[in-house]
Figure (tube, rainbow, N blue to C red):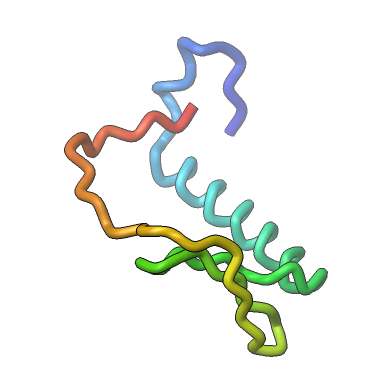
Length: 77
């Protein structure tokens, strides 16, 4: 799954692209967990980081209410 030019970008099968992204994300999460950097979670009252031992730290306060996305078009590259 190699793109040699921008014209070839649209010829990629979407399932292969999604699988490649998911595999890369799994690798990133494995490294984050191994280094105990914590997973970031956005809640309505702020941003929190949860570590492997279960400890939760509030990183940022604010109003992070859910918003609707009007356009559902996603550009991958």
